[in-house]
Image (cartoon, rainbow, N blue to C red):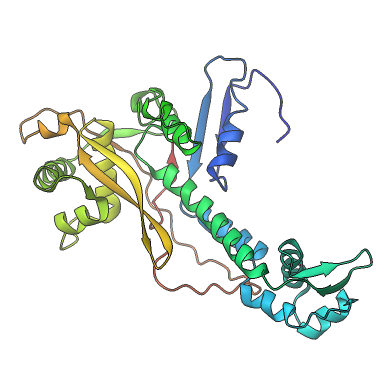
Length: 315
């Protein structure tokens, strides 16, 4: 954001950035003098709605672009006349035209006359939109992950060697030193879940957290989010290792998380004393009905991403 001061001590985000690259650049503005500095990320899954709104504004459905492209001619025509033909809101039309021009589907001259470009614009437009979506999903997974923050960032940018070395000062590595996130002692129910996780991983080795949940909570005795928090606490205690992975389905890469026992985890039983602390979360806020944007009707099929978390996660 144009800030070039060496002695910034704290960088605070009050919502999720759109990508890990943006986040890394922004927190990098603190501590350029080499002295200790702090990065605080305050987030809620509701932040996703903001990114969705801007995405749908900036990346209209490909059918909208197809409707405009079909009316383009080899000979230039006035942009205003084209908008009148397609009967489209000015803001939507301008965004769609911008994307068509960017990806080569339309040609625009200095007088804002438009003509037909090449037919291969769709593939690059769709790929760019999917990449943008993936960046947001990746940022959400990072905020909710149970791994060293700096090691995760380093791995993301390709340094696999240093990415195995924990930084030792984030909310995962040193939760008791965390300024924005509070922790509490685990309940008896959560401790019982720990024992069940250990037993399941002893029997079956590495498992996806989704499969682990379906195995341990067949009647939803505990919510999926609650079990994920238990796994995160176990990772902080050094009992399990959580890692991200992907699988392909219908040509798309779908991320998931795997859990495996560490050496310390294999040694745990019901009487083993464990330093097992959970994230303290705020009470759920009252649900508010979201206003619909008439330009971008939200049509969804199935669940997208994780459920909204109560309160605001912080680290």
